[in-house]
Figure 1: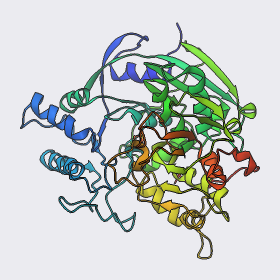
Figure 2: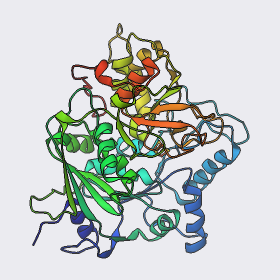
Figure 3: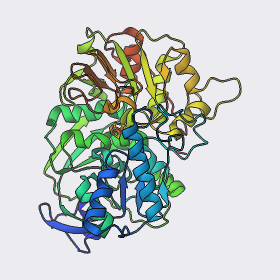
Figure 4: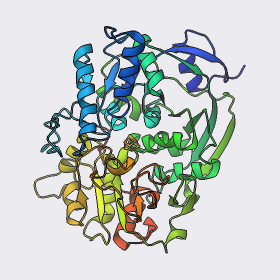
Length: 468
Ligand code: SF4
């Protein structure tokens, strides 16, 4: 009998069974349910309708609410969503709620936090979840956001669900899942200095297509994945959904354990281990030494090409941010290319979380705490002419018309985000090129899609950034 994949092991344990097989339907106990300001109000409405106005959630310590999407806008409907979350948190006595305390109703554009260390607001949910200790190997997390799969970087089964499923879990602590079959993606060798995980996942999606992993688990393994930082692994699993994947998952190693031990709000978890004899739906392999910096051209994440082939594409804007490309290591990658140079096109920078923003102020270009004479990452980006905004989803999802960095006209933008469907970042006719933070920074310097090998030849140190 074949060994069970990590995903199968987690689903077996949470359904109280010795073994599960792909295609079986199982009821599982959920460890964490996350929602945010876009889907939270809808989920809460269904919960109240189906379970009753007086109902309590199944476990108040396992519900996490993180407003992050439509924060920095004058749109009062968005602010009303925040108030709905606040009311629910207070009604239920929930512990894990990260309030944008600077937002009040009927006051137009909120005056953003002044100091990222002095607000309970956290920024993008998928970045904040591990930071705040809600992510552990071997557990199950559901979230009302398709990129909930990001937490698979920590050896967790994490997947997005709709509001109705989330409301059911709020009331019962359970959900019903079909066990996905697993696709294995192996990367050999060490990551070269001119590549990041974004190039790897764009190559994968370009090969299998945006529906190539529909309702399957995507397991990322091999020495190439071990050589990645935890944050870069998050970029891989974050974009599993761009191939239709039910979840993405990586092995748990010392980097994972150290991070989770330092942050987790619960002490015990079991580490799933990918067996050598598991049976896969398909197996795919890459040699990192032969891979090139990639882009996904408009208007689909699977419209792959190399950055080099796109060198004649003229750009109007660059955007560095989101749960995919707004982590502190992404900022370090970009800043190392931009240091001492000036951007040629407007370049918007949005930290993924307030912790990332704090680190941008405190760390140097090598990811170490800076001394008084050194420039911070934020200084370097500002000196290069970047336009810096407050942390959150920003223009990744377009958002209300006054969203920072939103594409409000049909321009060409190169972006570290994860989706480039028409209208995703604003104007339906805008052309979005998805790329790594290295490629986006190099392109910001020329105004054309630019292969970062023109700027990077030796490894960029990230020090303790993203692992402390
Ligand atoms: S940053 Fe973008 S992809 Fe990530 S949660 Fe926000 S809108 Fe979604």
